[in-house]
Image (tube, rainbow, N blue to C red; front, side, top):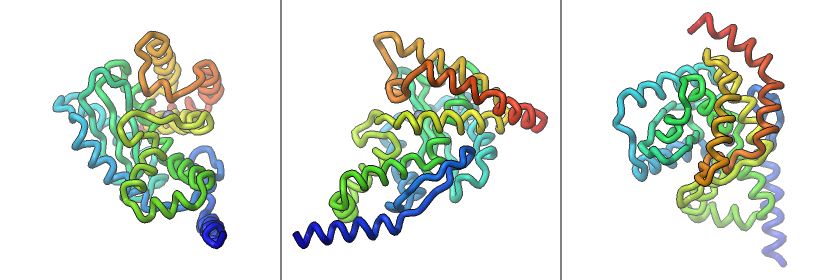
Length: 260
Ligand SMILES: [Zn+2]
């Protein structure tokens, strides 16, 4: 009984430590309990992924992804404080996937590069993944998880580094043993919105979002549904939303084009 009371007190304390975060581009307010240094954990997780996955030696692919990524990083600006941007191509032709972690760490797999035919489409994917990070979806999801699971989880994770690490990876959609975990529909939609705006501000055509996701849906209708797509729901809804947001994004694109 006393332990439960202690747990509840700690939970109350954590809730007090939490604060509201204003999501860039959308202005939505989200509640986040700080559960560690996002930037440091992102860097550590990325370093680990780099030791496990095969990094592409293709200078053309690497240059291309870095060039697109740098332009998006410029568009993100100070929405990601403390970012040390890094863009890495992983050599895995069968993996149609991309991800971004706090601190500006971005990974993209050659399988996805083969599917995305234009720089515009690659910019859309990177904008979407980076949108999850600047919106702090991982931290929000970790917060929700802590509130749901109760303070026991926090006590556990605070004492065990590996658990903390797993929680962090799960928060950012990466299962500890590889593979992807789904973001919620709300987070997916928000990352779509933010992503086309980052791409547009970086001088990439936001309409590529529609062609890209249509292509992904077609790919996903076959037997070999990419893991990336399985975590990205409701195709028709997504296309309808993107179309509704397009006029605003096109204005940003027209403005940015004179700079690039
Ligand atoms: Zn997503």
